[in-house]
Length: 222
Image 1 (tube, rainbow, N blue to C red):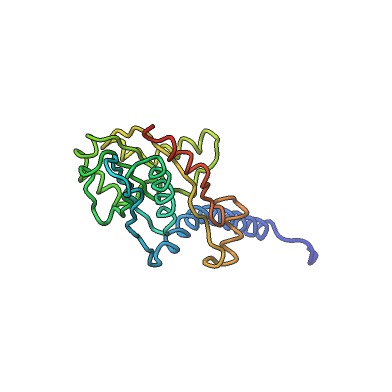
Image 2 (image 1 turned 90 degrees about the vertical axis):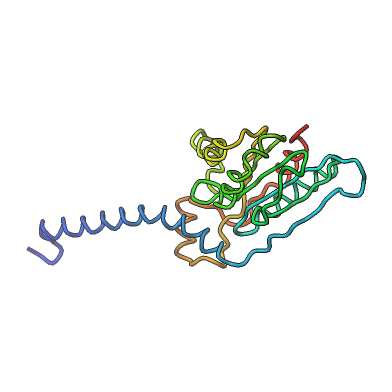
């Protein structure tokens, strides 16, 4: 046997290690993707209450209530409220953590970031606690997510599933799904960025489509 020849046993050992490493890497991709957002979401996020369109009298009022982790849902909620105010509504934007009273409004829009394939816990809890009031007024829902952004059948199916738990509690008149913020390059390691890019797990940067958000706000409750 020459130096360039390897034994059968050594060949299978090397092949096994390579295969095992590949499997481990593939299994780790899903874990890596699930961990990117939670790490970014641990930073303190401003959750303001905002008011739009309260200058005129005798307006119908709308509550736009949101749950967020990174803050991108705040911007979506504010953009929706701004358009509703232009349509003549008086709009309050409030974080769901403040437990606003949906019974005090003529219509309600609830929105939440998506984590682990569903709404944030405080959004689910709010919906459950106010189920009766939410059933009496026009209700619309929106999701802010960064996975399943495509128009293929699998992506659409996965997007719709984000609201399965909420639909078991209330019946919305409308639903919307908006892209949020992807990975922030400065908050991730070069290796993780390479993994996310190579396997197309999660996009980078701010993916919010403001035109789509405003278009939905123009049409909701029309």
